[in-house]
Length: 120
Length: 120
DNA sequence: CTCATAATTCAATTATCGTTGAAATATGGA
DNA sequence: TCCATATTTCAACGATAATTGAATTATGAG
Image (cartoon, rainbow over the protein chains, first blue to last red):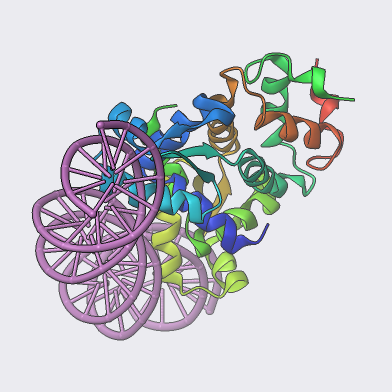
């Protein structure tokens, strides 16, 4: 991932409402949520939310699909994983201070339930 | 970590120069680098860099120590780990789409050399 | 076709951020 | 003490970002 891209993605997440939207969508999973539903859940004006969703979308962090009159937004999980990997990449110059606690916590089940199952 | 704190930390990283500074400091490891040394390496004016280091410092991402006339900056690895864990936390609502690739890549050695060694 | 719902786009305002030049503080050496 | 180096602080300017109200586009129902 290019530095420029990473900056755009970090900036997209670096705002209270947008981080809240993103977290909500992660919880919603692949099914996603309609824009109006998100607006009601977080008490954000529809037009304000639209601008924020557009920014998240341009950053590649969420995708949009239409279902009747509703626009359903869902997380681009691959982009998010790539961003996390990019941030962890830096710690690989002989210093494992950053990623070791992350890997430990994940392995311990602090993150997903038994992520080890996915390992070969 | 509180949402507010996470936003401040993401915002600190969401700027080209600051992300570059942070990456440089991660590569420098616990020894860190002097402010002037960073300024020369990234071709940033000393006063501009100072403002950016101050922001990174206020976000808790770097620490400062004095060595003679130089101020040495180094990464707060614990803060960075905590931020990554916070971002991964969201994917634990029954969806492992985000953290599984991260854990896999780390285990594969894409991140630190053999981070598994640190696991109990 | 007409109407209501869902969401976006546009223009304008306000607030915040990044950069710059000049001045100030801190440290070490002569 | 005086000077040079290292870095920060301050004030100001220009650029960028967030929010709001009004108008617009898109879809589905009757």
